[in-house]
Length: 348
Image: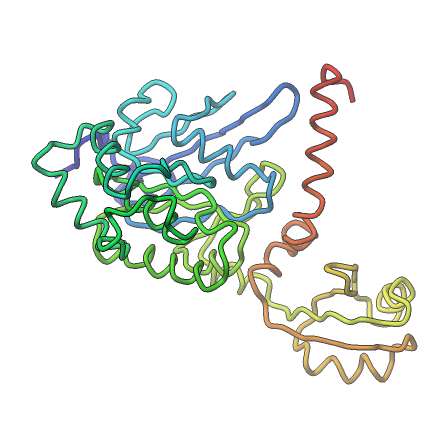
């Protein structure tokens, strides 16, 4: 039996009517512009019920804009977005009843207790009064905060506040939980703890998780990943399939003259190299076997070398021509250029 709010048509993984897995999110030709600045540039994807689906990309790539459209917090310039069979543009209230959202920045009332925050949320979402107390205990125990429910949120650590926000997002039993950069600003140990709770949700709740992140290790937790760069999806698949698509090892070297080393790698080995993250970086098959040749045939002195198997960062570089860290560094400059264009009336 279809759950409440689900459209009669069941979509398969391609977004077309069929007998495949039920699609809970369907996005088609989605565009979002701010003046003449395109934040999202005609993207298409679907998410199946029960998936953990990740949007991976640097800041400014269009991740948060997309999640805002899916959560009815922004209106698309063109295209369509359906959540649980509901149109995010014309059925906003119904969409909001079907989703939970954990924002990138905390939205908790820190002068209230954890329990008071959840009770206020329950009232906003019309959770039946008889169901509030047992459901609240369930979600607080799920994130390990039941014993702190009577404490002011101002006394919570950053990780505890994030866990409380996840509990709040689950309180009304949504079909889809959206997590916008759920661990940004947290230390590695707390990030790992948050992911333990998120992964545990799949064991306890019938829920689909859609998250945005620019952390490569977080993307590994996802069933599928869409890599987004400059407002366009450049690749979408499982983490393992994406890494397998690269097929080569990444080699990074520090040399006495990086520019000369890049030129010589091209001339001697036919290798296209570039400086990424402060090192001359290139991809070759069987990197460990190639390193002895590198030392023997490259005339430029090599100060250090590292070889790594294909990672999601290599996937990102393969599809975009840069690492995600380098893209992060350039995002601020692009943002300032776009703001200048907007302030000058869109003149280039």
